[in-house]
Image (tube, rainbow, N blue to C red; front, side, top):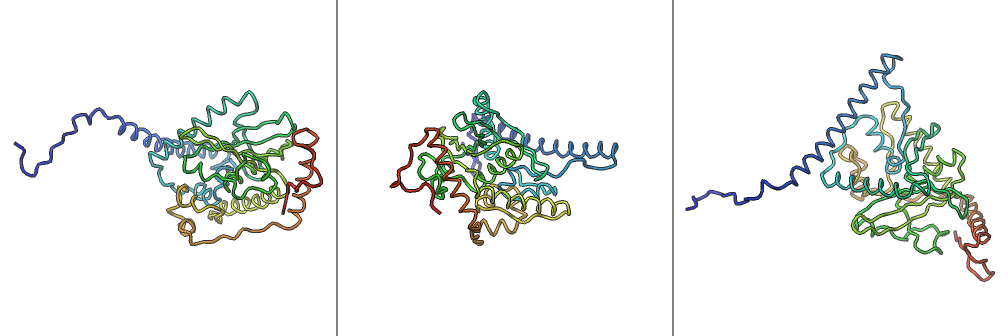
Length: 323
């Protein structure tokens, strides 16, 4: 007879469940990795101090992947703020994405250069790009970055906001602000090395069903103006961090503050921006930039005609580029 008020445990097979073990192992590994990095940094400082009398012999560098999101995010990280711990779901998403990157890089390495280091002392930038490819048709180099995303995120990748030069080409989508920033930093760095980089590719992969969407980032006067402007912001951010100050926020999408930044608990600006209470107006580039980009679009059209990629344009055809 069941005693009054007694709650019986009827979960006979609960002891066989492995999900609690998996979750605990994944999250504890995250903590162990952070502790390892902190101890490694401390040990490195001790070695530098014993040999040269300084605690750190490395320059401050910004990874393009973080610079693309927000320079204040990088500042929190560099100044030693403790990030919010990732959830189990976030850790698994990261692991799945990393596995997809690794597998795709292995498949493509015979066609180009996978996982290329990108270092620029001038810009104080260091990172790694996914794929570097020389186009056999044009003879130009392309920078590619792979992005894994959920079905919801995949649906957000549309043709809205597509560069005018690209609108006549089918199956091309508009990259996110962050992806575009990251890729144009890679393009700039490789061009500084002497490579004729003319195109950046952002490859979006749906983790749920394997579908793919592709965005292009042209190297033209507009991109060059944008990247030079942002490099100036990066140098300012480095100067502030050297003085122990946080850089100004450079985030362009509220969802970065709302869902992705691990320092959002500290950042009052990010909290307000995530709530939609800050409206940013797009800054228009100088008129000469658009004029130069128009000339470059015409040159690209002639190049593709000579290569037989497109048919020669008739006088009655509309232009490929409109301001």
